[in-house]
Length: 246
Image: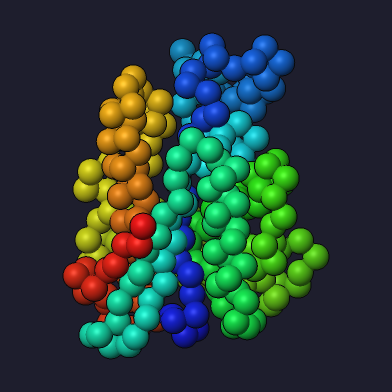
């Protein structure tokens, strides 16, 4: 296992680009219909309209509304985690801001790493695709194109837990429970983010909903860090030693 002080832990929250299927531009509806075909296969009563809430898991049809990241300082019982989030409706702006953080994080040397749960399958490629769509250069530490496997600076707690067994998916919540780590799903879970984001009608309701999403994302980052520490045989973080930077 690597030095945990050199790891930036992260998590993202994504939603469909539009509030419902009916709001999709006409040229995009057949494209979503094709993408949704495998989601509704052998599911009686399901249509592209009814499964549109799942569009956020695809970078072509979704967008990033929150990126939370954190790093650990110190060792032993004195170690502390610093968390920061980038969030809002302006995806390009938050991707730009996060890109600057990645550039700063990796500037010190080639020993810096990124870590997420299922990050290699979801978070890392999703961010790369949305950056390309937004015409933002992909930071070298995030970009895997043209790199040999040992040159990729990405860690994945789900992959670490698999120990080479590729037959199953282990959710962050399940792994946290198995390892005796507090669940990050004590308020909302990922399936609720799209509705929480798109349902509010007033600016006050929207602000409250976004803060719940940000808090949830930050809890996921802390949980990923705790799981990594547990898997690497290190003492867990004291939840009181978590600092949130504005």
